[in-house]
Image (cartoon, rainbow, N blue to C red):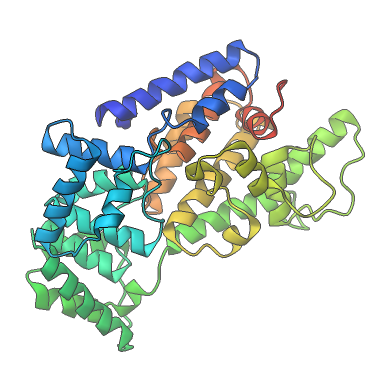
Length: 402
């Protein structure tokens, strides 16, 4: 568990997971107390709390929200990023709202703001990656995004934001010109090139020569999502894992089943993952998103649950990471439940999940991320001889007897 060596907050959230898992076992599956804690303002820090904590650690002193705002505003202004006063005040919850601030929206605009902060604080590559992961709950560099590739180069070489912004605009203009190139580079090569390229001119020449590398985004992650879906869905020629779990339950309890459902659809997979065969509906309209939003008030959890549309049309690496975590969790633990891999355990899950995320270019599971924490929490129950899927479904259903 490498996270334990990287900060007291992460270690606290790991210990919270152990404590809540033990308490959940003692009260035999009544998750109302757990849900109250998760949804409270002090169990997980909101964005404003994470940013304030980071800036306080950076300064080496306990900052008030107003002090942190003034410090960050002055640093960003000096770096040439033209920060908005009201936006920064909101991000740091200067007004003192009890629930804190959710911060910037996930997406390109929010990521750009986080890079501006990284430049303003003169963070190096490792510290930038750590800042993104702990504060923004996302990875720092998408090397196939030409702007972020340029930022990687500039941060590695200690260039200021003013130069990075101009250089990124020139790189984007090269791509928009439709420069035709047959050369491509894998992510590892892009990572290495960002460090070894000699100067700005060589960097722009590399971008032009590898045009296709910056237009083919998230290919590895998309292939991994497709692999997980393929094994869960199956086809008319072979049973998928979701269908196997469904048929095992129906045969065991002699149920009538859900006639008319397409057992190889994405909807069916999501329905099985969330509800299980015992509660699966006869409709193809899956309530998993509504269910999550009813149970979890924290948007870091509730808005991240995938639906059929976000799986079929993931529009960002952030969404893809959430999809893969959800699908991998079901793919992994349904095989445990079906005794296909009965020796798998919590450690195997975390190791294989992180290997998959790394392969896709994503950050590993993080105990400080509420969405990640939920799947780590459910997986921990295998130590008590419970199925993590049963725990997961019980939490979402509010069932007190799993």
